Image (cartoon, rainbow, N blue to C red; front, side):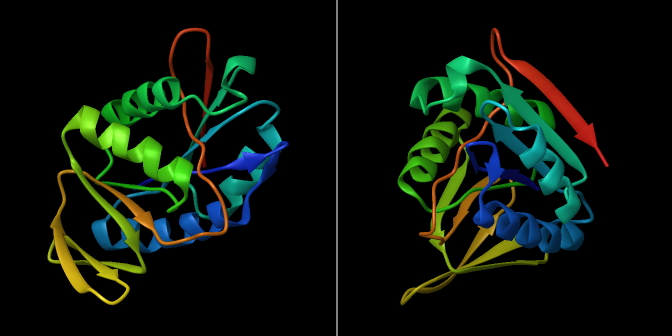
Length: 171
């Protein structure tokens, strides 16, 4: 399970910790591990902090050119990470940036996308997604990009691409 974490001014956003917790539950049900992706400048402290919340592998990308969101650049970077890591599920928050970014990556990869989920569970190798007022939907794993509903913030992401320094921390 891959999560797209966010930081601001080098500090980890609270909802990134929430994503790590949910990803841990899903990874356990799938018999896998949690991988987090974090992008920005001066993010070593945020990356280290996220590693204390059950993340088995931390992928960071640091470059001055990635300090601000660029949909095309970020989507290409995240796509490359997803192709390399082959996660069953990618989690991000249901923010404007998160929806834009993961929709682009889902389209590039030709995979499913579920947005604004209020709960996620794994049953019989399928994801059960719960939506407010709409009940439950079952998604097959192949992989799926999912946004748990969280209006507290925005998702950033990344790793890879020309000129970008990629660091992988494995706990």
